[in-house]
Length: 215
Image (cartoon, rainbow, N blue to C red; front, top):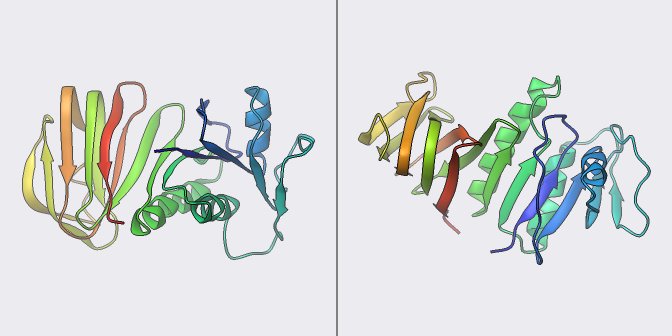
């Protein structure tokens, strides 16, 4: 499956390596990251308030108003989604002095999962994704994995292949029980029956080997 890369302006952006058939969207100042990496976006979208470089010649650009209901990255996601993309990688999307934007982009992972897309947020240190009803995620490697209920609760949560395993339990949105689990060099599985999960893992030691979302 081809990947749609969404590149934001936050400084912790992780360098991407798009392959033939992938689609790269710069969200506003994310264009600067891409040009620094020697890459040219396929599309640029944003209100251009964080853009610090000249727009590359010949790249389609959608300029948004400064006052709007959606973030630049949210609009970038829908530009990719409308083109049939269902696998997304977001980078340049955490902190940068704006914790509120980081939370907004975690919400965007939830939105993507609810629409039957698989989206991963990456920065230099960690990755994150969201699972909704009956979603499934398989990971491989060694490192920290944290699993949180998003919203009131997530029911029927099963975690296998890690230091701390559970079967069919309910995680609460106000109790961070799932923080700092460990994947110990093998394969880990996370499944759920209902609700929403946010899952975080070490970017350096853990990778996704399979994800199932409801389409």
